[in-house]
Amino acid sequence: MSGALKAYVVQDESDAHAEVVFARLNAAARRIGANKLDSDFHSVTCRRAPEFDHCSPGPVPFTTLFEYGWWRECDGCGVRIEDGAYDDDGNVIDFDIVEEAAAVYCTPACRVRHVAEHARVKRAEVRAIKVMQARLLREHPGVTVIGGDEAGRYTRPNAYVSRDKAGRLRIRQVVVHFDFPGRRHGFGSFRAERDQSHLDRKPALFVPFGDKRAFEAWRKAGSLRLTALQRLLLAAWVGMGEEFGCLTFNAIARRSGVDRRLVRRGIRALARKGVTEYHRGLWTDEGEPAGSGYGLTPLGWAALDLQQITAEQGDSSC
Ligand SMILES: [Zn+2]
Image (cartoon, rainbow, N blue to C red; front, top):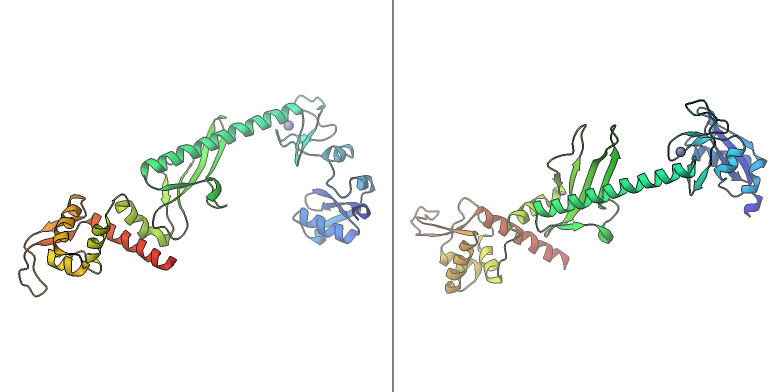
């Protein structure tokens, strides 16, 4: 049925931009055209344009529009491609228009320059992303870089490179994303941006608010490798405060359900990993001397925190 569509020229009255629209009726063309021009029905004019009927259902190539006196800017150099236009020296420009998908170039040479420049910028952006991902892994070993297939629209690595006034390629912004053990909400991001003069020397790291605790615990304790016995022993401190968190071997055995002989060996192994530390001269809540015992170091508390977060996730996923 497209053969029945007729060409109309819809023009914005305020800025003279125009579109050729194909429709059966003037009112429909006017509505479609106003939309394309980001204008509204009453701010545009609409007239029949039988000279473009042969291009139904559109779009009309620019070379055809050009023959009828239309103009537009070159996608390469920005020059106004208009019949009879003059260059800076006052000579009539001899356009050799190249159309490629929606892009229009003034000459083949301009297209070649534009495509080459686009490729140079693209390469610089890919390089910027690689450098940033390597830096993320160096500064936060153990995270998983997100890129490729698992990256959604908002977590794709992204860089924006453009030339400065002196013509040098400059990274304006680069953002890469990462995953880490214990994460439940969105991916983390690692980003650097350029203010007037230079790119952030220290990229900013973001994790979603709900994952901050998990990230901190993982960063501190994520590289610890604990055995099943050591994890059981660590759980003896669940529910204790950091200030009064000292336990005797007996208390640890009771709270963890682990045999006392294994407790002694396991706790000493944890101490060697920097998870527990020995305290002497302990007192009970009633003020009675209670001998000596073990407490958790800050690393130990982080490890316990991480262990609980991971366990909660295990629970909620089944
Ligand atoms: Zn050009």
